[in-house]
Image 1 (cartoon, rainbow, N blue to C red):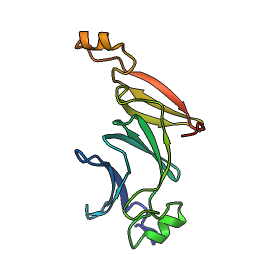
Image 2 (image 1 turned 135 degrees about the vertical axis):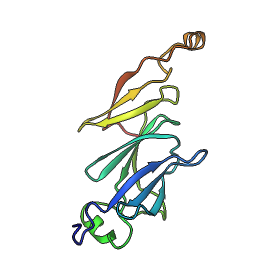
Image 3 (image 1 turned 90 degrees about the vertical axis):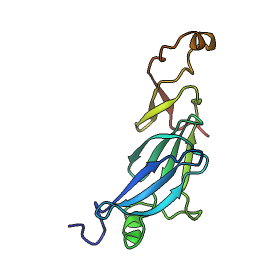
Length: 156
């Protein structure tokens, strides 16, 4: 039973359409229908998304950023109850509200996964960004996976 607030009835999913900005799709978990699609400005090739409270952290592999967004409000009839629970209405129609872009990686780093700590963004990198270009070209071996962290309090 979902009650009046729709808890458990809706789910957000990250989608990366080829050659376009990534989007979040809101799905109805009972019918499987896509209820709304919200664009993530200048985010391409998203690899991971993690929700922490009323924020979502999305890995933008193309630009090397971790994009922090506000949890979007659900589509009707659960819009108001989702806002009471901490979601935010979109400022720009059909787009997510970007809170901050956490920069510090490059496309070559190939940031893949993210974990969120109170003070840090911990990421899994598996690109050749930390490998000297001459070594990267000379070997077909995949680069080693490595962990890295960003201080969440750093300015954009």
